[in-house]
Length: 129
Image (cartoon, rainbow, N blue to C red; front, side):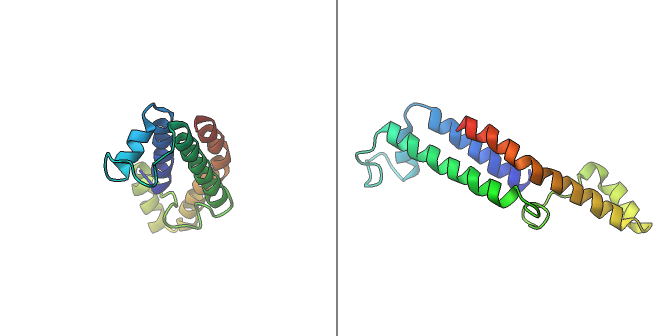
């Protein structure tokens, strides 16, 4: 699973936690214990849920701005989508016979498609949040 897929999985899991009852207890355990901390004291479940939703919405916005533009995937080695393992042997053979530009073009096309898909995926995440 590449880093982008991990990011989207974390966002979805976080949205699920925000929708569940007992959010305050989860927040307390994340912050290191069952005792009410300064960060959670006086906050209702609704307030913490709203804060979590706002943080997730901001994260989606940043992901769109970062990944949903030209070179969002292709220009960043951390999130660039590699040649699928199922065609890697074919890509390696193509490079050996002088077709490297076609392999790179294929990979770039996959990454450009992902860049264009990010805004549509963001709508799904925004609705889930």
